[in-house]
Image 1 (cartoon, one colour):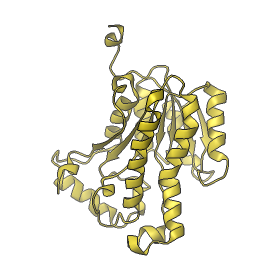
Image 2 (cartoon, helix red, strand yellow):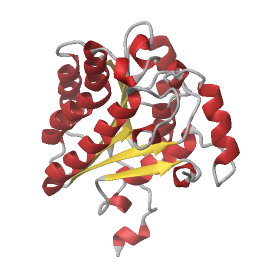
Image 3 (cartoon, rainbow, N blue to C red):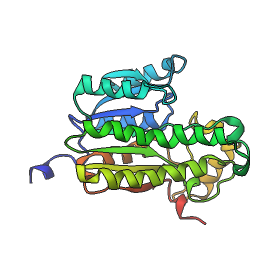
Image 4 (cartoon, rainbow, N blue to C red):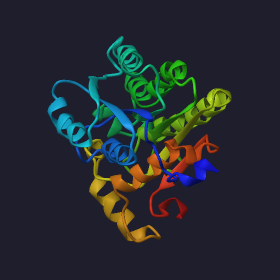
Amino acid sequence: MDRLMKPLVDLAGKRGLVVGIANESSIAAGCAAAFAQCGARLAATYLNETSKPYVAPVVERLGVEWLAPCDVREPGQLEALFERVKAEWGGLDFLLHSIAFAPREDLHGRVVDCSADGFALAMDVSCHSFLRMAKLAEPLMGDGGCLLCVTFYGSERVVENYNLMGPVKAALESATRYVAAELGPKGIRAHAISPGPIATRAASGIERFDELLEKAAATAPAGQRVDIADVGALAAFLVSDAARRITGTIIPVDGGQHLLA
């Protein structure tokens, strides 16, 4: 009964790690804003010293407690990040993985033409890193927790110019289901959020992405494009106790665009 007296999305006291803020327009920034609004304690990452000046103002505005480097391609850096989580907080309640990468030459070509090295790198950064984070987070979530990642409907159907990221995101979605099944007995949940097209720095690497944005606005049943605040609202719900019986899902937040053939 006491639980019913609290706001449904109440993250007060929960500790969350946000990986993937690039600037104020990032999906991860929208999620971090929602987490903060709901009372969570946050830590965040930046890719490197070049990106840090774009990330620092965002996390400062949101009251993020600490900021650390995280390039999953650098040996030991991810492990160091989770060691800091342990040192600072002693545990973790939720994690957002919002990173992806594919070499430009492989991303802009046909899937059948992608190089082995390019495919492996895209899969490592965009998918396997989520599995690595899940493994590192597991011992820090003794009281359960929630792991989130970000996908796109190009995983399910062919989206022009999405190319290599389609198979990679499909792998990420499958990985999410297995994480949910394997860690579920420990009270750790996992979800993949699937937003419609959003104008982020990462999306700008996709050829003719502006056309994809226009099409989404014109064809989505809701008649509007989604934004990072829409994604953040869903993310905050999923990591809250209100969603404690929900796990292993790939949830679209795209104004209904996933309904269309």
